[in-house]
Length: 532
Ligand code: NAD
Image (tube, rainbow, N blue to C red; front, side):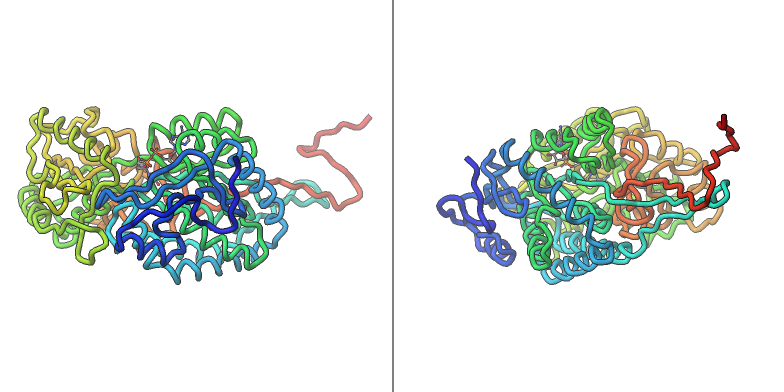
């Protein structure tokens, strides 16, 4: 049966929730303690499919049960999105920019509590949760400006009295499939550029972070409604793999922007290609920092510390490999271990916590298996390597950040070549920069990379043709924590996608080459003569 609600409300009786959680949910208009919440929005709230549980990774508390879409609801929501697109494409781009400006203001007003929700549901620490919402605010600012600058081109024609235009037009409905670890910002990157371009969007968030997507959708929906714009410009369809597959397969979705693991991205990329749709793939990373002997250690050590431990090692840009020049390796590792030993671990909502939990119980198992593999291979575990066992942390998915020195650097070995989504840092020692660059590039992934040096010759090599083959190539800046202004994304098995700044907006439009003849003759190009 199809359930329809004009607001996101209770479907059945109440359940009790901790004050820690209910204060955050209530501030975001999410009925705390509702037995179930509708998880589909296309102008109206609905949801009568499978139940998704949002579980707090810190305490194990079930924060909410969310009803995802049935196949019928999904079909209907896709139809509403298409209608919303037909409307939005007629709204002038600067007016779409004005919508984004209002959305930016509405998000900014709720920034800190939205950040707290990210911490509550995903598990990252508060400053990172707030930073993630700030990223959505920033990309809205960017898209407001862009709405007056999504320019085409005038091309010189070889024929007299002719001109050629390259014209960008909206593309249609954009499917945005997102991962658990950035439950707010990744939708922001896509939504803001896509709306500036005149498209409607269908968001399928991770099944384990439905509350973040509901909170964001409610804020956007209010702005759309106030401006008389169909809510299905920002359609939300919560659900798992089945819902994702249906969106990916739909010919009503010409562009699919997918963020997630390499394994799922491989399936999604092929499925979209098989119907000649377009995709943007933002997949796993396996990022390295290289420390030269002339590096400023006072900057490099904290940067590696944040890169490896920030978001408990669950950023696509987390530092997973550390290549140290042999001359400074003992000193660097000593300083890094000292920092690791000071880490404050606990509730990510508490101000001075630097290490929160992993997102799921399953991730703890993946961490333990990876550490066990390292141990069995003879790696030296310098610090960490276990689950935290204090009583205070026992309800959450807390693991010790780990530094390991494997016996050899073998980029073909699984411990170097795969992304383990946990705070494990593998260390290798090198003598020449060329060797470190070769190791940096020898893995399948190509997202982020970082070189620490004061020597301009090293910088030139690193950012040039013989340098890093990643999408993000930093100097004296860690692998993690990009700004929105540059195009974000990775190469190779990270998927070659680009989102956010740079020229990323050009993917959210369909380009037409228009040759216009305003003369009294109709000559053919290249001087071809076809007269009788
Ligand atoms: P995941 O691949 O398990 O899931 C991502 C999304 O795909 C979810 O919404 C999921 O429900 C959906 N999905 C699962 N199977 C599907 C299918 N067959 N068809 C369509 N959709 C399907 O990833 P995750 O565990 O949520 O996220 C962690 C991964 O995401 C890591 O590998 C991380 O590096 C990557 N990530 C990459 C970036 C980037 O910008 N490169 C950013 C964030 C996260």
